[in-house]
Each structure stands twice: as structure tokens, then as C-alpha cells.
Length: 87
Image: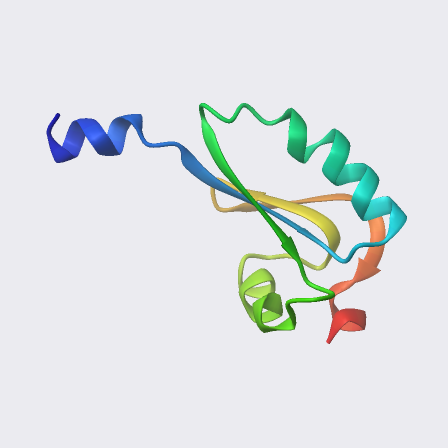
């Protein structure tokens, strides 16, 4: 398989950011787990315990959690906490 073929067949990255609150956990169980894993490599990031990733989340457009970043766009799901509250 060539590099171009590998790139074509590689799953896109999706990152689910949350803070561990009940809203976030429910969204993770429902939304993040519903994503087709053959199309997306899903990473779950708990910003409450991994504060070093807050800047990355902000740069991706995350304003509140839970949020899902896919294909360069941030999708905010319900409202658990503001990103500023996690700093």
C-alpha cells in the first residue's frame, strides 16, 4: 500500500473534550461512543485532569465542554462548564 493509499484509508481524528461533570459523562456515553470508529479515531480528553490540553482545546475553538472537535470544527454539546472555568 502506498503512502497516498494509507492516508486515504486512515481514519480522521475526532477529539471529545470534557471535564468529568454529569453532562459531560452523559455526552461521552451517547455522542462520542456513537461515532463510527472506522471513519474517526476518537480521543477522549478530560480537561479537568489534563489542564495542559486546555490551550489546544481553545485553539480548536472549544468555548465550553462537553465539545467534540471533528474536521476542524468544534461542536458544543449541551453545557457542562465554560473553558475559562477549567483554567
